[in-house]
Structure formats: C-alpha cells, structure tokens
Image (cartoon, rainbow, N blue to C red; front, side, top):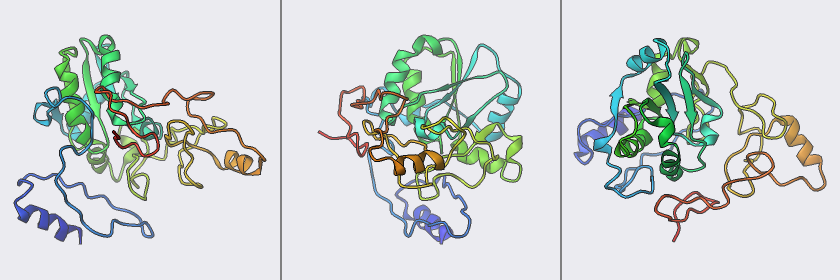
Length: 276
C-alpha cells in the first residue's frame, strides 16, 4: 500500500519529482493511517512570521545523516551549538547529545514561538556554527531561513531528513548514534520504534525517569495545554485524591497563558491552531 501511495503522488505531477517520502515501520498491533490525503496548503508547519523573512528556498545548508554524525563525532567547541527546533514535549523524551557540543532546546509549546526565541537569544547564537534539527526536516527549512535572516550566526546547517533519516542510518545499532531517547511523532505510535533504550524524560509529578505519554488519559497543563509526563505512581496518586491539584507545566506555574507568534496572532491554547 505505501508503495502505491508514493507512486500515485509521484505520477500526479502536482508535487514535483523530488518528494522526500518518510516511510517508517511500526510493530504489529500499532494503528496505521487508514488512507492517503494530499491537499495544497500555504504552510506545512506555521511559523507565524512574514514570508519575506521565511522562505524554504533560503534555508540552511543540508547535512546528510552521515555528515551530521561525523560533525558530532569530531567533537565540539565553543563555536558550535546544537539547536533543537522542536517543542518541549518532543525534545524532553529524546534529543541529540554530541561530544562537547552545547545543546540548546527552545522549549516552545508551539512552533510559532520559535522566532521569539531566536530574537531573545541572538547574542547566544552570534558567531556560532548552529546545527539545527527537527523530526523530519520540515520545520528546519523555515526555522533556519528565519535564523539566517538575522545575520547573527557564523554558519547554519540543518540535518537533512531530520531525526527520522538519522535513525534509519542506525536502525540496527541505535546505541552507536548520537541521538538519545525516543523520536516523538504525531501519530498513534507517539514515538518511532528505533531508539537506544535511554529514558531522557522526567515525570512532572515526582521527577523520576519517565518517557511514556500513553500510560493513561492525556495529561496536559491546565493553562497552556502542553503534553505532560506522569508516571504510573503519580497517576494513581491523582486518581486516589479527592481534589487533585491542577496540572501545571514548569513546576508551580505555567508561563504559557497565551501563546503568541511574532505577528501577535493568537493561538488557541486548547488546540494550538490560529484563531482570529
């Protein structure tokens, strides 16, 4: 079925001849997407800034997974930083860790917050070689374009095909790669089956190692609606409590009462979609 779907897209003539299909496996019992759906859209992932500042054709130079691996294997210096463009609920259960390379996590609740992060951290990125990555390479196309428009970093590179393509290179030996933990995905699997077994996440209740979002009903911050991690023990404690405390990310308080993009367009804190 997946081969027929890919062939249908290629033969349609509507999407060019160099479509990079991400085909990922899943163990038996996992739900698959029941059908193929293709539709035109102005943005695959909305960054929320003026198009003059963000153009995919002006994105950073691509590094193949092997080139990316080699750059990390060579070791870091004060001039190189890793920039994870994903949201906090993704990066907390899996991320790249290079030898001596500083990793910067933007910790956004929504991708539209990324430009604001860049604007606040230009001095931190100034003069650096910035190695950007995301799940499948889509967000980096626009995120790197925005960063390059600021003319701050000495060099910006992005991982071609994202974490997905990198993990394919280490499918049979994930421990030999530089990605630790699990690659969060936006389907019923929640993460890709290839991982090194490391648990990088922490329970929002007790702080113990935990990276399973699906051990019960979705736990979300009462204010910003971001996904939260709750271990089995903390879930059981909440269920037993007569009046459980409100779930708030960031410990005692949530800083995301109203998510805004740099154009000051409001985002619904429940769905994450733009609203008027």
